[in-house]
Length: 251
Image 1 (cartoon, rainbow, N blue to C red):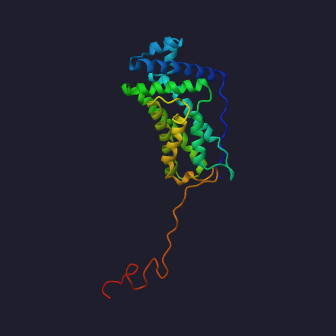
Image 2 (tube, rainbow, N blue to C red):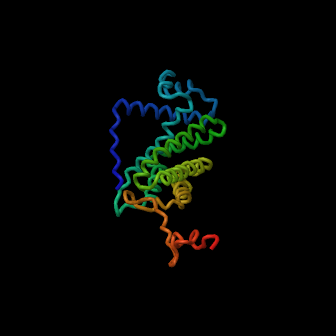
Image 3 (cartoon, helix red, strand yellow):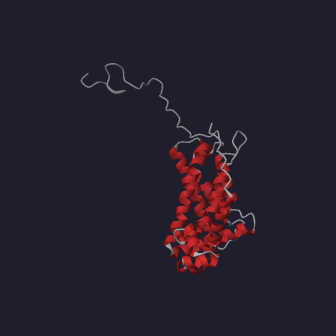
């Protein structure tokens, strides 16, 4: 039976303060990118955030990297939520747990969460004119896929290829849902919100993955059914015969 995940240690006060500062800078950077696109500078982001430029570069290598904390927050919530899925005979199937976790990550629980989604929308709309910013978006989702694999491996008990396919499908569903929502003007919640879109995307992209139909902690990769031989046939021909069903040449 797959082992339960080890609980993460609580970050120190210093680490929490650092993360809060990085997120605040990320929100400012996202707003500026949405307004001005690639013309935004690191100096402008730092000044508007109220930090020194040296502090900015202590946290981020480039101006585009400054938006990573904002983009990664929802991804981290999704993966952590899935990792905490209950196991046992009464638990929902892995596919259902995956969809529920994705829905929760993209359903704004309060006004700040809704505003974060709107900032993400602004960023995505700025990306066509800024390849470096788009590269950051894809890097965040690549990291999400890597983080999903051990979680899905533990929940499904499937093989490496099947786990990787499941992680790729689920991560693509999340990315496409957010991109599709950002391209329109729908509210962060409601029938055209990202939570509804990710549910539809998840069902479509994981439909061909039987490994996700089992329950957490009990599921496993489905093995192909053993081939049965028809009565009266053997794997090898009789002595004196050639390959099964044929005579040895020259007889």
